[in-house]
Amino acid sequence: MQKTHFDEKYPVFEIEIPKTQTTATSAGDLIARLKADIDAHPSVAFIATFDHYAHTKSLPMGEVAEEIIAAQNIVFCFGVKLPKNPRVMAVRPRSIGVTEFADHFVVNFMEPPMPIATMAMEGWVKALRDRPAA
Image 1 (cartoon, rainbow, N blue to C red):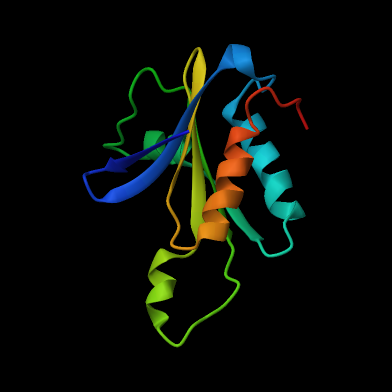
Image 2: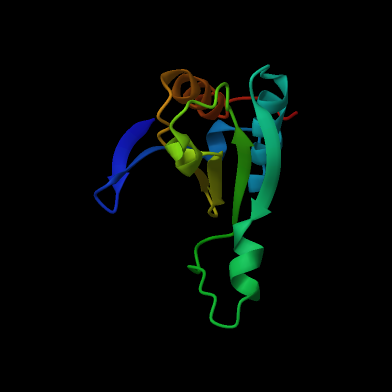
């Protein structure tokens, strides 16, 4: 897993998973595995999945790189507390993105401000490699 900065300001964790290193056959398979992890965590609430590929393709001026087969997000919230400062709402909820290419997947998420959330999300994403289908 690699930590980089998107647009020089957003801290992003990302992993590339060759299709030869997972039994998953689609972005949807990986999203289902992440949902199982989210559902199993006592402090996390599943919110939704979002098919970014379908949405973008449906727009009159939508543009999807030719190499991308699928692109989905899973949206959820750790939200273990609501402090007095309401700015926390600006960084919630969280999401993990899964982009599928012909021979690999790219899975990424923006670093949350809560270390326990970062550790959980990293664990979920790293476990997608060599993990049997759900």
